[in-house]
Image (cartoon, rainbow over all chains, first blue to last red; front, top):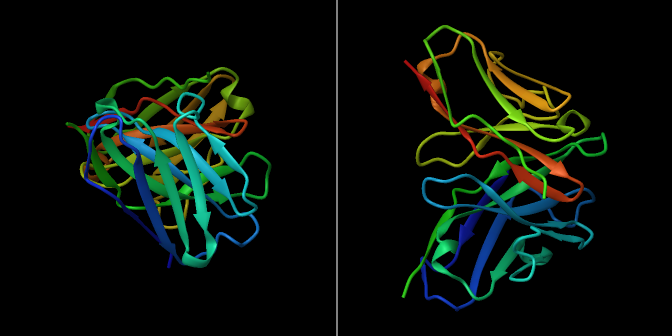
Length: 124
Length: 106
């Protein structure tokens, strides 16, 4: 059974660095083909993809946030960590981690398991 | 940057067919996915690889993708299908979501 759970601070002050942890079970990020992403959703707004990390350590970032976001993994702990620097109130959102299902065909990637999300509010 | 465009809202009567579109440049050359999100819940994958249903997703959900438009079709729409729906595709190594469509069943 695949599960993912996000954890981190509920409240962060502007200009601070946000660190979120995704703890997962039911799969291993050391298995070839496995990938995990972070996605966020401001209250009442659409989903926004942030970053992805692959089993082989490759990392990919949203173009608009790549200067502020870093994704990393600890395979032994089954965790993926997202850090976001210099946060602003516009970063207030529910942050989700999700596993990526990779199909056999090139380009066939989808988010098949999601965590419940963690709401982060940026306010002084 | 790549963009996907969805209508903000779609309404459908119970038992009828609902169609939700998603438009993007040469979207038909990519694979489209669809996610259902009900209030207070995480998104749920309902369609992947344009037209495949994950295990447990009812057959009334189907998808297509050609040219610049991907379409999610819900046949025999039920009240439980009322939710926000998001399309998603990959622009090389970047995931892109549409703005979401609120499906109202009335």
